[in-house]
Amino acid sequence: MAMESMHIFLMLVMLIVSGSVKAETDPCDLSNYPVKWKSQLVHPNSYDLPAIFHKSDNSKVIVSATKAINYVKTNMAEHTPYLKDAKAYILNSLSSLSNDKLLEQSELWIALEGLQGQELNKAIHVMAGYQGLFEGLLLQNEASVSINGKLVSSSNAVYMVGKDPAPLDELNYVHKLIVTNSSQIIFNKCWLDSK
Image (tube, rainbow, N blue to C red):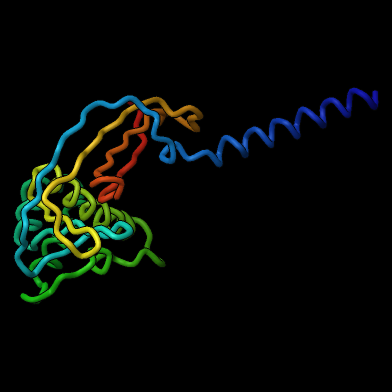
């Protein structure tokens, strides 16, 4: 009887440990997924002010407010109230930048603290909208890129899709977009999906 209890206890410990190890593995930390496509990107050697930038270590993706506004108007969805509100918020914040301003995009986000419901959804989609416009304009060769303060003329994009080795739910496919110049990561995006 004591041996059976000990066996059950050990099985429970193993189950808890394996579950916690599984939950601690971030599929976005892996880079061995199959490559769907690769592309060489070119970047403008200047940008107009006002502009916003996305910072990653020593690199910046820089987009003029005019290009950002045009991209958001054309590409950001507004089929739900919070998406419509997020789009309006982004357009308003970009339109109100002073003419000589180069601003880090996170300064235009809505603080999440204390938000609930539609306001929280709006704030989350403002962040996603900014990330989407940087991704879109990079892939359309419309974004300038600087590394250590110097503009670079090109970079390489790799898009990977593969199965999560330890899925926690039905979102078992990992999508990764990585844009680099030499070994410097310029832009990195990872998301989970059901396909």
